[in-house]
Length: 342
Image 1 (cartoon, one colour):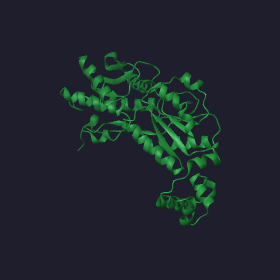
Image 2: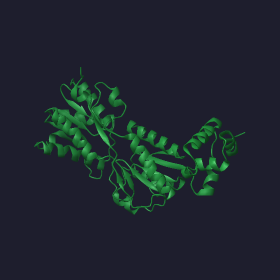
Image 3: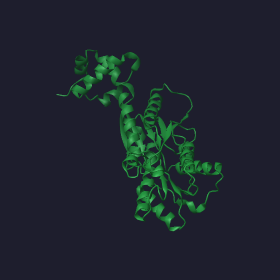
Image 4: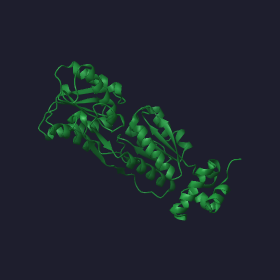
């Protein structure tokens, strides 16, 4: 027989109403010690709340949707883990939606049929336009995640990509590099991630008195997912142009690892011949050889913040105008720019 809420209450030594308050995260009605006892009893009994009944009572089913563009990218896997952990602490379950960066899939989460099946949506958009976001008829609370600029239509969590890219480029300049390539940069201006990281790169060069060299900028058609393959392909194009750069700024770690693979295949050493940097600080960045210099966003803060903002919107405790939030990031210097340190 399945355990009931009465079984949980008996094991935890509390009332049924207290168990209900914990499940529904009515935090003002119980102490941290009581919450811990109830959660421990839930875990021991493997109790599963009746979501349908919960929805009938409160209009809240306790499920959030997280829509990400590339489920194969370890960065999104890490962000998803932080979001799932933060949501669990608040009594919510997270469903993962893989949009593959396709507009039709993003529309399903932005006021479409999928949005009606959950309490709220965390959306990392790639393909839909800002005008489509503005015109969307949305009743489900939404928080935007990621580097796509969406205006002030929803709460949005994203690091300052311009500042981060500038810091990364400045690191290369401080090491004496002057011919710094960047790849792969989407030609379509809608891709905010590419545009912002490219802007930070340009700002650092200009501050150093260096005119950007078009031959060091490898463009690609939009839409493009930043993968090992896109990094390999872009690096092959760069090498085919002839004159080598001193260093290469790759728009994320996967592209950087692909670029390093191509350099190795052509007999070039990193960083002795060409330094390489990435962005995101995925696990592969410090498990590869050479270890990759990169920008490390505070993924834990990102995950907890988007969940907090969304649940506050769901519960109606956050009612003000949408805001943009910029969690911290840091430069992580590793072997791909400075070599092995004694």
